[in-house]
Amino acid sequence: MSYVWGSVSPIKVPCQWCGQVLSVPVLNRQRFENLMELGGSGNSIWLDAVSIDRSDHQEIAATVPQMGSVYGNASCVAVLLPESDFPVFDCLQAACQNAIGILSHLRNFFNNEEVEIEDPSSPQPTKFKHLAEWSQLFFENLKQVQDNLQRYTYWRLEGGPAKSCYAVKSLILGAGLLFTRYQMMMYQYAVIRTGLTRGTAPPTWKRIQTLFPDEQFFRYYEEIDPEEQSFQVKFPNFGMNHLLRVRDLPQGSTLEDEFDIALLKAMTAIRKKGLVVQEFLPPTIGGFHRSWDRFRDWFRDYAREHIQSQTGNRAVNAGAPIFTAQADLFIHLGHSILNVNIPTRWSMAAPTLRTLSGAEICEIIHLDDVQLVQRKFASTAHGELFRGHPVMQGVRAAEDIALATLKKCPIERVSISRLCLVQLPFRKQHSKGGSGNSEHLYTWAITPCDIPQNELFVARESLNGTIVLATRREELEYIAAYLTLTDHHAGTLLVKSDGEGRVDIPLKMTERADQGNSRSLRIGDRMIRGQISLGNEDDI
Image (cartoon, rainbow, N blue to C red; front, side, top):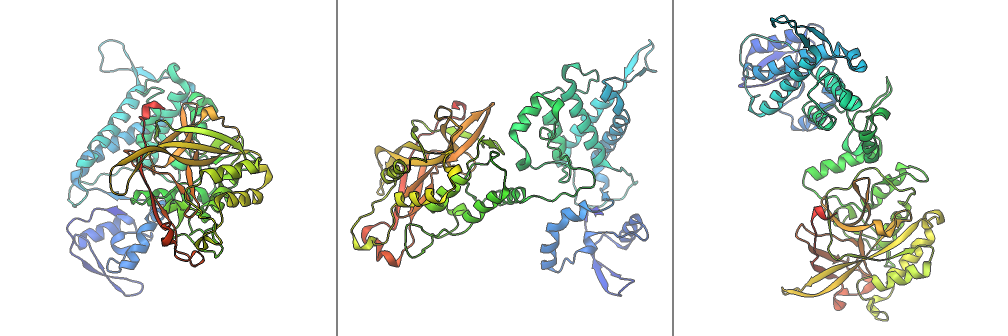
């Protein structure tokens, strides 16, 4: 039972079973007895004022996250509104009455037939289109609820006559889904004038979903396949589960998130708190096999500190790559190759993209040509090795790490992967202020062999500000790879900029005993700082 507390004065209520006396925050004893009477004799009732010990902060912290399960597993949920909320209640009640009338005529929607009856109020014999009228009243009532939801208060209890409205969510969702499916299927041939068009039906259904969320019924954003969604927009006769975000669970099945969905939901929740979670690999699926073990493996490896493969003493980078944007070359190159599957398909479209002016895809190299790959890593890696210097004994060059990675990866993945080299025009900023001459940032990424070079473009994605290689398929943009730069000492780093194109990449390197004092060579606290030129979203 859910109700507004209003002004409360705790009352003492003894338990008939154990004798414990509870302090219940409620308006008065009569209000508490009314709630118990409403719940019914012999029923198990969950009431937050009684079921949560408000004086125990640990119990509150443990119980609040479980509220979805409490409400979701209840046989009945009663929501009690104050008298001041009667206007929104009346709209909901009217929408439910409309929905009952609509859902009682399912066959008419399936057969595309209107219900016409004589209008008794008309002096002339006039036929009244019943379903069209109900449909328009249904959406008008829901619009009143949505438009005025913020002006209703839920903070005080008042007296007044009792009204009841049952099965609100199931009725409104059922009618809304019926309208949307009908309009998408019948298109311009729809006989029942619902007030919707094929274009407005999906966004109207989305607004209804927002008003009446249901985790058991709706797919999460991360579960929607954009290619399936695009196909279903054009050919709804083949199904609309991704277009309408509706689950298609068999009867009697239980809903448990797979690892990938649970992880993506957790990452979304973290981002909503303002924390940045870096992405290193594009969300591709398909090809040889669809294994979420691979997804689990890459997250496990990027969510822990990386051992620096360029050292001989197993030193580690400070912080997990998903938070620092700094990874080890051996681990990142390996996962980039293992992530490649052909034909390339994506589980989600890219966030908003802005092109990079003047960015150039210099070369795409087959990974089978190991010696050429080695030379390219040698020529594009940042930082000096100071070969022969005693401080640098035991340091492995980036090209040697790349070679070792290629030898470890399965040949079937290496054969379908390409090394893509990209130059980013870059105006370096001096440490003392002011801008220097234009130069280039040398970056790289691993791409699948089935994406031609002429289909790739360089852009900044809006989620984390990372520079990516992207492609366009059927009017949607997808991320093909995240661009990284490799430094001999700091490892491999994502290239990021703010919305103005400012780049600020710290080349952090943990101080290591096998290198003596790296400060003597000034390699421990370097920065890449400067400016890139961003285009407009409309340029894509």
